[in-house]
Image 1 (tube, each protein chain N blue to C red):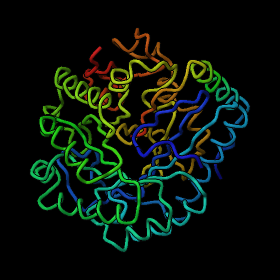
Image 2 (cartoon, rainbow over the protein chains, first blue to last red; image 1 turned 90 degrees about the horizontal axis):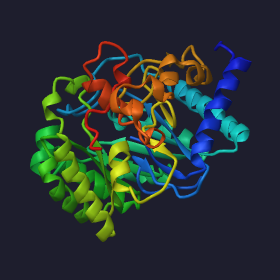
Image 3 (cartoon, rainbow over the protein chains, first blue to last red; image 1 turned 90 degrees about the vertical axis):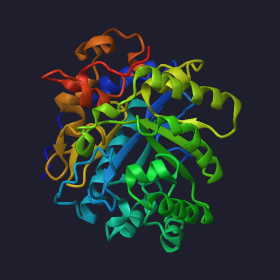
Length: 34
Length: 353
């Protein structure tokens, strides 16, 4: 059974995607997919 | 699922609040070729079963969907199947059948030498979004890198795909061996009537870790980038790249706030034994999906968290104002750095700025 993620993990996720969202307000560029 | 462009190497987006999230899945490390510049190590591993591939794909897609719900960012998840050579694996059809039923955008990265008419027809049935074929130059150069006869076989494969109206792009890894024939490859790509040509920088890792002398100088890279820039301004047949530095240079007139290297930001790679790494060319183990959850790895991996903060970087990248748009190619940094620790955080030695 895989370890369940905790509240702290979810908060870190939210912080990270909020930071990306702030930058996305200026538009999305190319993201490497190689 | 919305299709981006016929290019499985880079996503060029116009709408705000969208992030492509690429899941690269190595379904095997076995390959029928033995290319000079390959970043693989030809290792023998305990490959994931079909069920394990299905489960890990499902797990990652569920997390991405949850991110979308919570963050209000529109994620564009897409899957790249690669290896090794995808068609060496006997149950490749079952894997494609699973993905086609998920109704997700998915691509296959291949050398195309095994794609006969029957396989091409099946790919159409399985609704593959596109196939990226590695072609490293005109015939003589390609065969020097990938083995005698591999160019002709790849062209047969490409034609079989096109006969079935499958979107084909070519990808070339540029190095000292082939950069002078890049324009010839461009003509080959046009003559094959594929939908695009994509290029990547050589990452001397794995099988090619002793080929650092094949790395291009900044001036040589700039020559290629200038050719691409001029071509893209004047031709309908575009050359594309996901390379962060090349993208900054070529698309300098486009205004945006987020892009660049996907490692730690917009993608993940699962190797054929379920080991998770930041990128297929940056093989730093982060965990293993046979025992660890993807969510746990994504949020708590020390390597991924270090990649996300500019203060952890070294050299030019640490001070660069374009950090959120670029970050250099972390795989190139890792392969070429002389640092003893945290090589993946070093500056990109091929930065032309």
